[in-house]
Image (cartoon, rainbow, N blue to C red):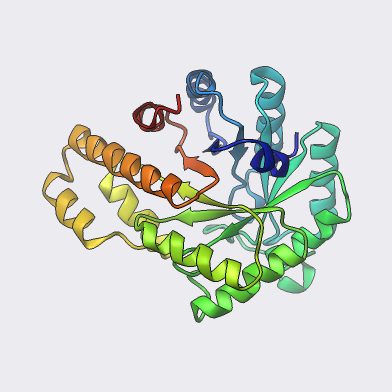
Length: 288
């Protein structure tokens, strides 16, 4: 089923994001997590695509297994950094052959420890170009990323929104946001997007705080902001894992309640391949 149809038929649409584990033990753990989260009846799950396409084979295999073995609709991430058009085409053919209907078209990040082809060898440089190519296939529903606080490489929010609109014009059917912790950023972004003529669903990406050190690293990498009050609350308990997780669950629960009231079409949870925090949040919301 195409995810765009879910946003027309359901409310709220709940989805989970996973990454391909590097070990057999990690894969076993992921499927334990998946078995647990499946009981929450997610509308779909997505699988990330490593920097520079470094998990290409694992991503395709994993979305295929999840759809076949767990019976959950899946979306494969696909990035264009460092990939030739032929390589992108091969992935799309594999996904279509596996009856995967949904792709998240991303620019992507270069791998940290590997050389990347010169950009002249890339098939596509930007996510909108990748989306436009996928659109020619007709088989796929296409998701895209958006950034309530602005993309870290964009000179301004206005420039970032211009390229976001370009992505939609070139084929993206719905948008999932980067993680954020201040709902005003989401509400402001949606308002600006609608004023700019972007009408597709804009889905909040939610990352529950379960490890404050980890979240500080993530936000530094992606350009998201940790609210001052959250930092003041978490700094004294940073080394107390259970207290940090309890705080993160309560914070995300309230965040989701406010977002539903603001008209959000659902939530996309960045699970980090774990079940506990997301499960508790959905139970708190009465969405389990």
